[in-house]
Image (cartoon, rainbow, N blue to C red; front, top):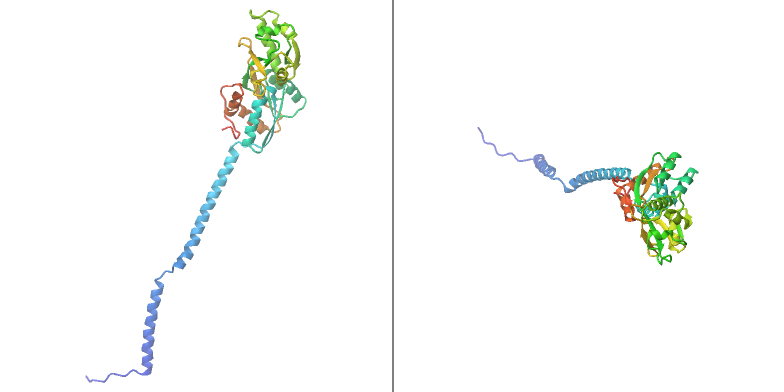
Length: 328
């Protein structure tokens, strides 16, 4: 084996070596770059995904809320349109309060009343007056409405009332007991006999005439003192309040805050008194049948009964719920 001296690198060899080294360096740099995950790239990828998820969640929430709102609107009993009520004059105060309560709770609802003697209202309906609900101060007029096919049934009694004798506060006739109503010269105002309160008054007088504490002709003598027979009970109260009569007969609930300081009362004992019944019914020709049914149900419900009671009415037992806003 012979010894040879080392070969010298030529220019071409040097270039080849340098290229090899450079390639190795580039490979190393390329590996290092591949292992780094730039934060900006991750942010750009993650943000849209997060936003999309949030948008999906928000959309689902909004859809759920809209669905819930729609359900609430459909089931809350909110009513719109006009509901026309023909009601006995003695119901004026509580029904006006109910109107305020319901219209406040149902902005699209308009309640329109026509108050008067129950017989007059029934006659107007028979003659073609348009209404959705009839509330009478006696069963007789509701029965008459049924005979005329204005209503589908005898209605439901929602309240009761009592009779009372009223006198001007200064009591010029010096009336201190029921027997004094038969004294000659006493000026008495009452409602016409066809008006519920007028009929109840005659019944009470008949009961008194049959009692030993009165004379048999008591009713006849009292009726001889009638100087006016009005078409509704509010007119009776007004005439006594103004001093145009010495006495009158009305419902206990007619002694409202606006008149109580101008009158005094004489109680009619239970054995002579008549408990007036108030039935209510939707009319068969109602323009707003849904509103009519809901109003009747409200009157029979707890809120309606509470309002009537607050105005002195004797309310019915077994009240039902209501479908109108403001009733729950």
